Image 1: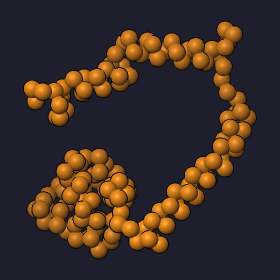
Image 2: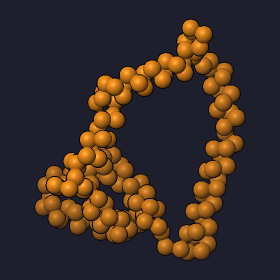
Image 3: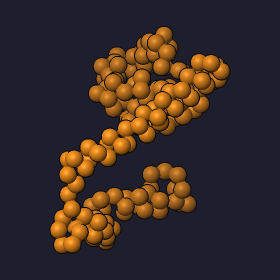
Amino acid sequence: SASGGGGGGGANGKKRAALKPGRNDAVDKAVDEQLRAVLIENGKLHVPSVRHVLLVQIVALPLHLAKMVAAHGSWYYRYHLLKLPYSQADKMMLTEKTLGGLDGGDLWGSMGDPEREEVCEREVWEPAKFAAWQKSMEQRSGGGRRKQRF
């Protein structure tokens, strides 16, 4: 579009492309210099030992476990005890998880936003609704390539 908003082009698309590795030599050079400054100590390359990495992982384990328990507890409280409807983000997560193994694991990634929203609204994470959605997709595609995807 002429305004530069929406769509895949425009100024924002160019800015994002410029920040990707290999797309902007100046940015790559600056990042390389910063990494060297962090990794090189007293003229020697600092490589963490296995013991150091293991120690950090052991120290971080209780934090990771606490976050996991809190997330699962929150999910259980909201959706099993209070029986609240799923948020849009949770619908997206459930749908992505359900479709994750289809089409070589790339079905969700190959969908556009409108198609993702439609699939989320159909609540395909429920087995009966998934079967109905799968059947409708096979009928819509006429048994062609998409039939093989499901």
